[in-house]
Image (cartoon, rainbow over all chains, first blue to last red; front, side, top):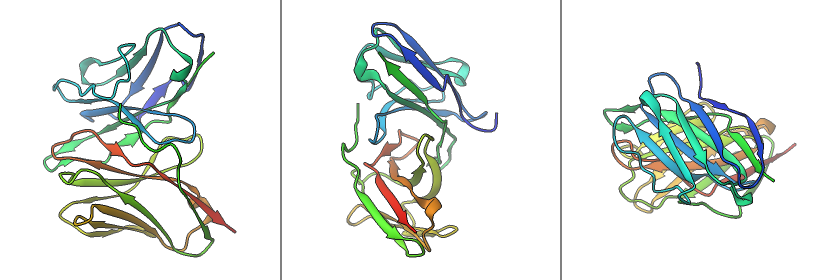
Length: 116
Length: 112
C-alpha cells in the first residue's frame, strides 16, 4: 500500500485476554518500529526490526509483550494477559535504511487499545 | 522501555507570527534528527529532517536548526497558521539505522 497500515484501528478487550496488533509497513522498507503512546504523552519505544538482524527488544515493558516480523514485512505485536495499564495507542512506523544510515520513518494511524 | 515526558509544554502563538519549538537531545553520537507533527487522533507526520553534518535546513515555511555543541534542535515555523496546531516531536537516531528515540513533545496552539 501507499502508507503504513495498522489493524485494527480500535480494540476493546477484557482484562486478562490476549490481543494481536498488526502492522503492514511500506513495501520495501527494511526497518520497522513499534511505539506506545498514552493519552497526552510522548512516544515510548517498544521494539525495532531492521532487516535480518536480531530485533532490538529493549523497550518491551514486560514479558507479556512480544513481536515478530514475518518475511521481513508484516509485523504482529502480541500482548498476553492484558492489563488496564496496557491501554494506549500503539503506533507502528517503517523506514528505509540507506548508506548514510537511518532515514525518515513513516507512521501508521495507530491502534487504540482499551482494556476494560 | 524508554519513556518520554509526562507533561507536554505548550507554546501559544498568534496566527501569522513565527513559532520556535525547541528540543534538547541526549545522545552526542546521534547523527540524524527528525521533526514530526501529530494532530489529534492521528499518527505522527514527518515534517523535516537534518543530518549532523548540517546546521540548518529549510523546507516550506519550516526551518530546522541543529547545534551539536549544546545538543539542541529547533523547529521554526514561519507565519504560523491554525492548521499548525498540533503536538511536535523531535526524534534522534544514532549511526546505521538504530531506533528512533523521541523527545517529550511540545503542544503548539495557534490563536486566531
